[in-house]
Image (cartoon, rainbow, N blue to C red; front, top):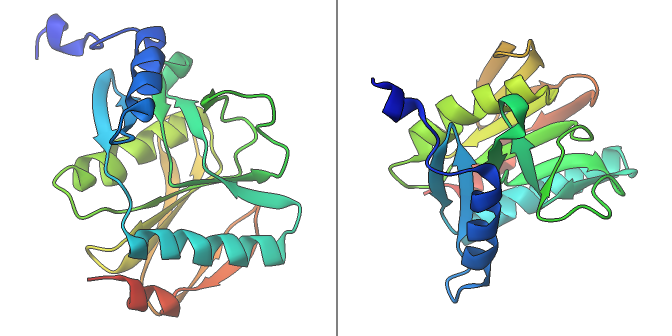
Length: 193
């Protein structure tokens, strides 16, 4: 890899303007900028949306002061990356006054639900765990519809998550502190192809 390959495709400010324009387009594109590379986040399908509803309901019932936000976050070293998680669990007022891209400090958990596209492996299983860990987000929940598994990443050390616990759909999994919630993943079996 040459030094040119290591350079970002654009400055973060340029990305933010491009993402704003893309979101206003007829297709409503949702862009991300991770590791200096531009990415397009696929539009969620109905099962994807139902999984987010399921998680939101569980979290709000257990912790009514929290909300599962649809919020873009500045991630990676020096906040030069921009990720659009499928959900960001934080205090209900955490992002009031923020624009499309917010500081991830209030985030207790980010969730990604895999899409059926060729970019999922690199994006959701490699780049995002690293980006979220570097940013210090306490818990990353990956709901993997390809493998029918849930992985809970925790204990970020500034480079990676030190803990990763994977269970198949149908098992219970703990979302560790600062959440302390238990998810029964049985319903996820209903929302995969």
